[in-house]
Each structure stands twice: as C-alpha cells, then as structure tokens.
Length: 117
Image (cartoon, rainbow, N blue to C red; front, side, top):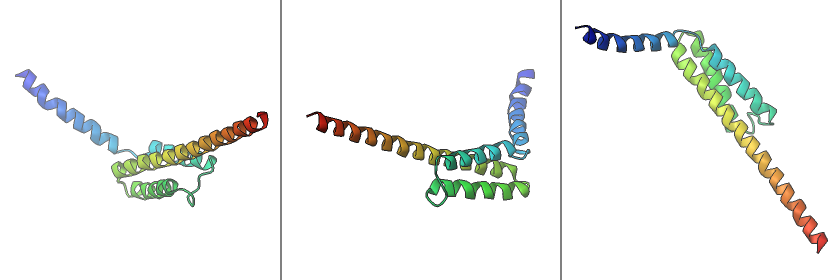
C-alpha cells in the first residue's frame, strides 16, 4: 500500500516545487536581462540599430509591469526572453566586428602581396 502513496505524493511534490518557484519575484532574471542589455550596448548596439535590443528593452519593461501586478511566472519568462534577445544582439555585434577584422586583415595581405610582386 505504501508504494501507491509514493506514486501520488511524488507528482504533488513536483507541482508544489514548481508553484513555489513562480511565487517569488523574478529579480535574478530581470538583473540578468539588464546586464545583457548593458553588455550589448557596450559593443555599440543600440535600440535604434538593433531589433533584438528593442525587443529586449520592451520585454524587460513589460516584465517589470507584470511583476508589479504580482504575476511572477509570466514576468520571469519575459525577463528570460529579454536576456536572450540582448545576448543575440551582442553576439551579432561581435560577429560583425570579427568579420570586419578578418576583412581588414585580408585587405592588408592583398596589399602586401601586390607590393611584393
């Protein structure tokens, strides 16, 4: 009889853990999103030049409003999405920078080859 009780109790404990996780304000997620937006801006990405940063800032602002209304689950999700959008913007900026550096090196090599021959 005891194993049957454990089969019922285990899913209830999982549900309780999930619900309690959504019951707290998403301060960590919001902080991480803010940090990712700052990092993207440090790479020269702005809301006017990047759709991802625009989305990140909008999602973070909405997350704050939803958290203030006590809806912590959706607020947490939006903050996580804002962080992802900002990280994508930063990655794209870093990629553009790396490609530009490669192009400069290739141009320099081509110039050296022309002068050598």
